Image 1 (cartoon, helix red, strand yellow):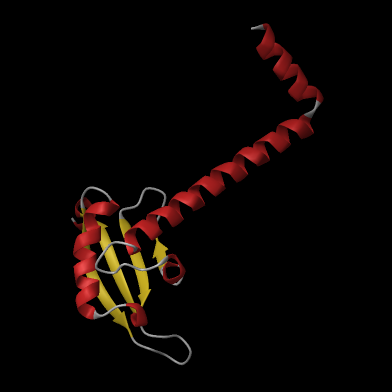
Image 2: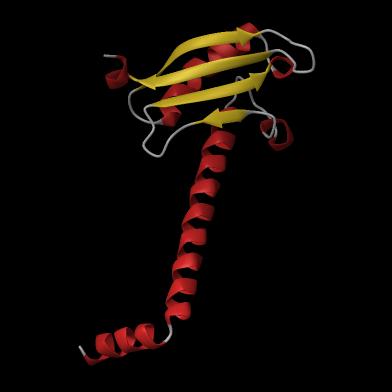
Length: 129
């Protein structure tokens, strides 16, 4: 009990130290979330039918939320074909978590400077209802 009181007195006397500690904790949480996001993306795109390298995986984007009900991968069309994307979507769905299924595969055509891309969307089965 005495230690808790000493900590509270120190925080009252030095508010900058408490603020700095809160900033460091916030930066640590943000870095951890970014690391897990990149690890999940690299794990998904390195699955065998697609089998991208780390350098190629940087060209892939993945959209998700904190508690995801949907994952959306955007893959450049130069890295895969239709058959490979379909096999990959079926193989990677169980790796994303329980209940995820590939819902749609859209081919985004080439425009002026942006190359053609595949957009693969995975959704939890409960989210479809």
